[in-house]
Image 1 (cartoon, helix red, strand yellow):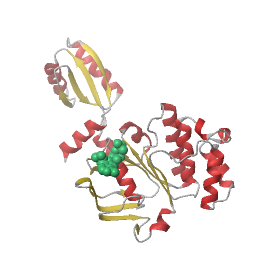
Image 2 (cartoon, rainbow, N blue to C red; image 1 turned 90 degrees about the horizontal axis):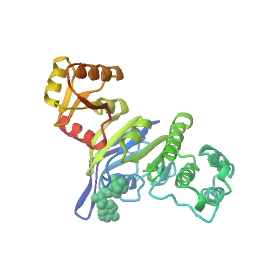
Image 3 (cartoon, rainbow, N blue to C red; image 1 turned 135 degrees about the vertical axis):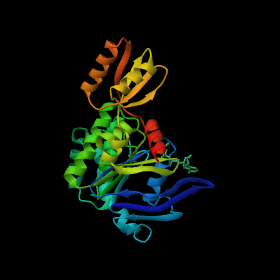
Image 4 (cartoon, protein in one colour; image 1 turned 135 degrees about the horizontal axis):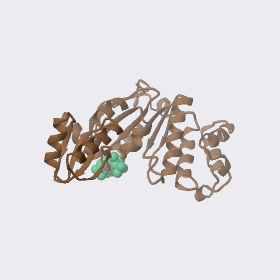
Length: 299
Ligand SMILES: Nc1ncnc2c1ncn2[C@@H]1O[C@H](COP(=O)(O)OP(=O)(O)OP(=O)(O)O)[C@@H](O)[C@H]1O
């Protein structure tokens, strides 16, 4: 494991914001650390980076205890938390050169990093004029400069437009596949993490509700077919008789486990032929809130 915490807890005053967290982040993974605002993601990341001191429990990174091996561990971690520390009056390249000098990294890595995050053509533009997405990519380039084995990113796509989100996602996938890094990335968006993560941890109110591979997550975040119809109870009964798995019935909607697009067509035909009016039918992915419900209900 690249990151392993045991019984990790943290209090701000008398508010316990991290509760006995047992994270397991495998080598070469993109680990999506998922949770709503205020769940404790940033606090956890600050603990992992030793920006906050561990109060209870233990943190092992690269199989070494963090407190005892602080300097050697932290020198192998690249991090981006909150706003990237960028000098706006310097160009992107100057920002990187500055940091390279500080870290005693060969200057030629600067061009390599600009290339990797696709900022070569904007290298000589002032960083203050960069778009949010470009700033985030510059932040990632800064974090990658010392060639860390582990990259920790706190909500790196926050505030980005869809294009910016795709760019960051592709960059992270490339880093893991081609450059053998491990990426730990926090987010409050299930859909975003699902598209790139190999492993997921879900935290709410400081507690880890779920941890596992993306396959394990798919098993519980199964999409549904949402059918808006006039007589939901009768429609649900008909569907059940026809061996469809009805998961929920409300006044306006019937929900059925989704298996395929053609199954959605079959349901549409079946209900229409039996005289039901279909106002709408579509595939619905569970959002984080619904996922929480199924996790806690299945626990
Ligand atoms: N310096 C602090 N002093 C007191 N309480 C804090 C401090 N920093 C965070 N908290 C509280 O700790 C809890 C967890 O916050 P944290 O920032 O870790 O959550 P988060 O999951 O990163 O959320 P967000 O996505 O909003 O940043 C919240 O209730 C927050 O109000």
